[in-house]
Image 1 (cartoon, rainbow, N blue to C red):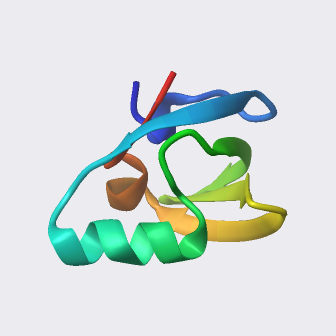
Image 2 (image 1 turned 120 degrees about the horizontal axis):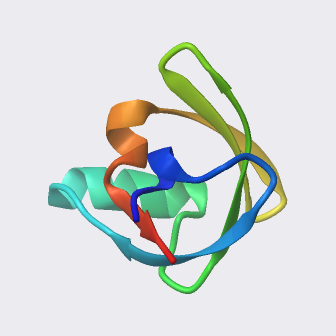
Image 3 (image 1 turned 45 degrees about the vertical axis):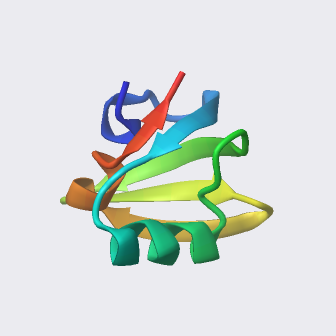
Length: 70
Protein backbone atom coordinates (compact mmCIF):
# COMPACT_ATOMS: atom_id res chain seq x y z
CA UNK A 1 0.00 0.00 0.00
CA UNK A 2 1.38 3.47 -0.80
CA UNK A 3 2.44 5.67 2.10
CA UNK A 4 -0.16 8.26 1.03
CA UNK A 5 -2.97 5.87 2.11
CA UNK A 6 -1.64 5.13 5.61
CA UNK A 7 -3.44 6.49 8.68
CA UNK A 8 -1.56 8.94 10.87
CA UNK A 9 0.13 7.52 13.96
CA UNK A 10 0.68 3.96 12.69
CA UNK A 11 4.30 2.87 12.24
CA UNK A 12 4.85 1.02 8.96
CA UNK A 13 7.76 -0.88 7.43
CA UNK A 14 8.96 0.38 4.06
CA UNK A 15 8.68 -2.46 1.53
CA UNK A 16 9.80 -0.71 -1.66
CA UNK A 17 10.80 2.73 -2.90
CA UNK A 18 9.76 3.20 -6.53
CA UNK A 19 10.14 5.88 -9.15
CA UNK A 20 13.03 7.00 -11.31
CA UNK A 21 16.61 6.43 -10.16
CA UNK A 22 17.06 10.06 -9.07
CA UNK A 23 13.77 9.99 -7.12
CA UNK A 24 14.78 6.79 -5.32
CA UNK A 25 18.19 8.25 -4.43
CA UNK A 26 16.57 11.45 -3.13
CA UNK A 27 14.16 9.48 -0.92
CA UNK A 28 16.93 7.16 0.30
CA UNK A 29 19.00 10.19 1.31
CA UNK A 30 16.03 11.37 3.40
CA UNK A 31 15.96 7.98 5.16
CA UNK A 32 13.30 6.13 3.16
CA UNK A 33 15.08 2.77 2.82
CA UNK A 34 13.63 -0.72 2.43
CA UNK A 35 13.07 -2.28 5.86
CA UNK A 36 13.02 1.08 7.66
CA UNK A 37 10.17 2.35 9.81
CA UNK A 38 8.05 5.32 8.79
CA UNK A 39 5.14 6.94 10.61
CA UNK A 40 2.76 9.51 9.15
CA UNK A 41 2.41 12.37 11.65
CA UNK A 42 -0.12 14.54 9.83
CA UNK A 43 -1.52 15.52 6.46
CA UNK A 44 -1.73 19.14 5.34
CA UNK A 45 -2.96 20.09 1.92
CA UNK A 46 -1.12 17.89 -0.56
CA UNK A 47 1.78 17.08 1.78
CA UNK A 48 2.44 14.45 4.40
CA UNK A 49 4.53 15.05 7.51
CA UNK A 50 6.31 11.81 8.38
CA UNK A 51 8.79 10.55 10.97
CA UNK A 52 11.60 8.57 9.39
CA UNK A 53 15.01 7.77 10.96
CA UNK A 54 14.40 10.09 13.95
CA UNK A 55 13.67 13.01 11.61
CA UNK A 56 10.47 14.77 10.64
CA UNK A 57 10.15 15.22 6.88
CA UNK A 58 7.46 16.77 4.67
CA UNK A 59 6.91 15.07 1.32
CA UNK A 60 4.35 15.62 -1.41
CA UNK A 61 1.58 13.16 -2.15
CA UNK A 62 3.22 12.21 -5.47
CA UNK A 63 6.40 11.19 -3.62
CA UNK A 64 4.40 9.36 -0.95
CA UNK A 65 2.73 7.30 -3.70
CA UNK A 66 6.16 5.95 -4.67
CA UNK A 67 6.87 4.62 -1.17
CA UNK A 68 5.20 1.26 -0.58
CA UNK A 69 4.65 0.10 3.01
CA UNK A 70 3.10 -2.93 4.62
